[in-house]
Length: 66
Image (cartoon, rainbow, N blue to C red; front, side):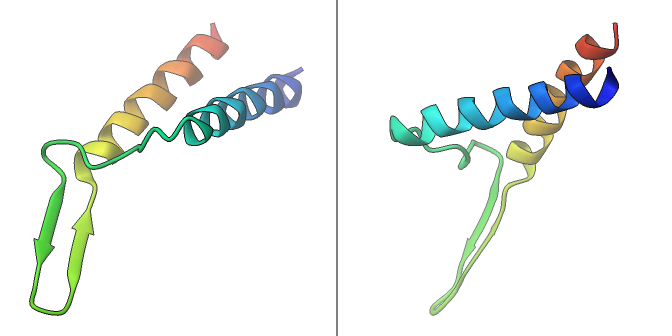
C-alpha cells in the first residue's frame, strides 16, 4: 500500500507541474533568492524557492502518513 500511495503522489505532482508549465507559469525567482550578475556570468541560488518546495513536500508527506 505504501508504494501505491507514493506513485499516486508522484503522478499528481507531475500533472500539476505539467499543467503549470503548459500555462506558462514560471516557478522560481522569488524575493529572497540570490542572484549575482557578473560581467560575463550569472550565479543564481534559489534559496527561498528550495525552502518553499521543501515545506510543501513535507506537508504533503505528513498528510499521506496520517
